[in-house]
Length: 314
Image 1 (cartoon, rainbow, N blue to C red):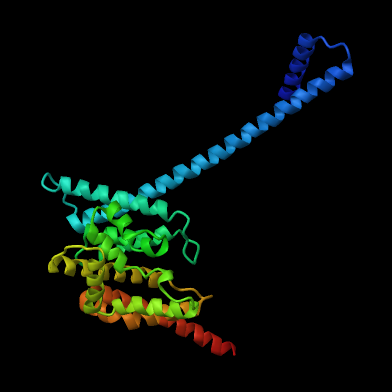
Image 2 (spheres, rainbow, N blue to C red):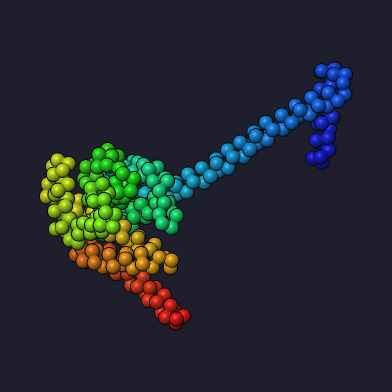
């Protein structure tokens, strides 16, 4: 049927062409005719390709938007449940709306900024930020500040945002302060010896995480640097937020850490957690402590199983 339609259309085009142009030379008639048919097909095909590309990109965009809509709704539902106990009424509706605006703004801002950043396993880095935001809501005393810090927590270190950027987006200098405290210092602050500065940079960062007092010393330095005026109660709240987000971050890291092809990294993450995070977690967030201990045990069992299999092969 399709072939018959093309033949009939071809006959019609021939008739119209000869009728309009009245070309006497038969060879020339066909030559000119098929030249125009060729041009017509090229443009038609290009149009179809562009249309197909447009259709595919549109479908993918719609799918992605639907997925993101699902994820942001899940996060906001979690906020509603954990912070408001699923009770939105006339007294707190305005507060809830304000929180929704803040989280939505931070969420899409970080999604855009991290759009081309991927983790080692080639998943979008933003998935990690979103996961940490949800985990921090499952820990004791969840708050919108902790959710925002979780969404922003790698922005200074990984996409070179600044304290001022975070303060502007979040509208809160305490959130920007927490994010900076959770960030390793820029590479240019260290020596040119790559091995040396990498080691020193990590050690310096982890030392801050060893205890409330060591973090307070560092936060006080940042407060002075940015000329902030905070009460002791506000500083203590910022430090607790920093630790809770870091515990959530480490919980997600360990829960996605297993890689049979990179056992050295798995071992390193386990040892880091045991050395620098367990004591502070035990003191400041017992729930996070139990989760971290459980994840460490799970990874150590897997590592032991691999070692056993290797010995059996040998």
